Image: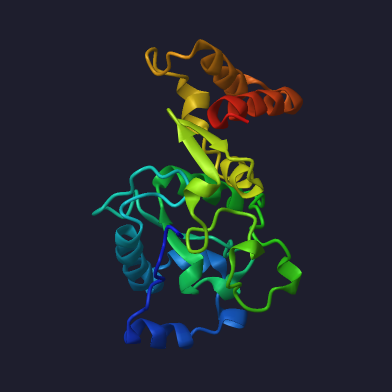
Length: 219
C-alpha cells in the first residue's frame, strides 16, 4: 500500500486561483515561496502532514505538526524541471527540514535530480509507480524499497531505493556522527555498516552493501 492513500483535494477557492495562473508565461519555480502562494502551501502542508502520519516522505523522520519550518511542501517531480506539475496533488507531499534543504541546495546549484524515467515523453502527470525513479509516496510502499536498520538506510535490492537514498543523502546522520556504542551486538554486521558509511570507493561501498543485504535478508 502506498504511504499516501489519498491526494489532496484543494478547496474551491484554491482551485480557482490555480486555474488563474499562467504556468507557461507568468510562473517560475522560484515563485513558489512567494507570499501569494502561501495559502496553497499551508493547505497542502496541513493535509499531507496528517495523511503521512507526521513522517517525512523520504527519511521517515518526524515532521512538525505545528511549525512550517520542519514540515516543508515537497515537489516529488522537481518544480525547477517541470513547473507544469507544481500544483498537481500527486506531485506534493511533506518532508523534514533536512531533506528539504538537501533538495533545495541541489536545485540552487543546478544539480537537482530528474525523478521521471522518461521526462521527454511525459505530457501528463504519470499514474503509476513505474514512471518514477524515486520512491514515490503516492504510488510506492516505502518498506518495499528501503529498510532502516538502527539509522542505516539500505535499499532492498531496489533501484528506486538506491536512487532515493543517494538523492536525499539519507545516511547523512551516520556519516556525520557514526553509531551509538550499544546500537548493535553483531560485530560483523556493525563493521560492514561502518565500512559502507565511511568508504569512499564506490566499488568497496557496493561490496559492503551487498554483504549487509546478505546478512539482513539472508540472501
